Image (tube, rainbow, N blue to C red):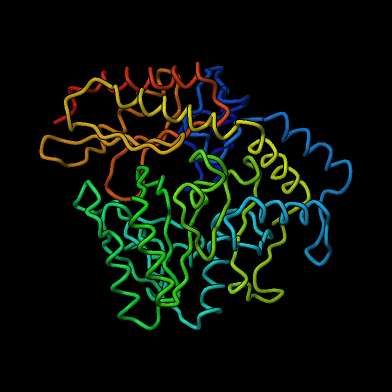
Length: 419
């Protein structure tokens, strides 16, 4: 009764679907009713080192004994050290860092402001079914809010029907080699495109990611037309692809890279890493009160240290290969499900005989997984109707095998629903 009364105090968009979680350790959580679950989605796709990683807890505790907050007007040592480490970890050329933000949406806003000031242009180009955050300008440039009443006026963004490398709404399943052409045509025709925003891995739409050649072609076209290329890596830093960033994985360096979620092992922190040409904002134009605090920066430094540990990312690659192989082996008629995976991130589509996505089946599989003790997510961007798995990078081989076994059993349990 107390729980229900407390929930009623929340706004409608915050009311939970499930009983509260009260404990977490590594890849496991437990709810208030005592049921244990494997966390196959790292909560909000953000706990790259799992729950309560000892290195992060230790760093936070030590920092709290020194200073817990400092204004951006002061050069607090932890934030300065993190800025230096992020430049070291970033693709070469991204040598400026803004850390005074709490998450990916604010990092997106920083990127939008920076490219518009630096280029003197206003339009942001992005694919349909893209998602860059929930602040108003981030929503405006996201292709996921085509009819939202929150966005008015509907200016400043161009949403393109790109190929399957970039767009979950594409009618094609396989790369045709020209997925970047819609962007190329736009920036060559218009003199007002400030930037192309791309998610190297669109997790929310079902784990959509490009062929390297298409991303490289887009990089060439943006440079040729003096248009900025921005990578939204909120979902892909740090370690999820088996590399420090997806930019490293694809071998393509953007002009701006945005980070959040896993940057501080789940603590609230966002960052924008910029080429010096886009370091154009002045004091008071993008730094937030609770961004880049000493505590969150200490957590981020500890996260980076773990990721840089001997063989850590190599192990992520190895785990990812076995993870993909296990998901590929789910016994089902050819073409009825499709698995897309990169590193330790995977999306599973459920397809009808007529080739159409089946969201009801994906939702049922997610419920079956939960009933068997595994938390997963279902895509909520675009039409893919995919079950999404993004477990912590620290998940043991045994627990990864258990996850894939549960997914396999859950899929078998709903085969009759495939039409």
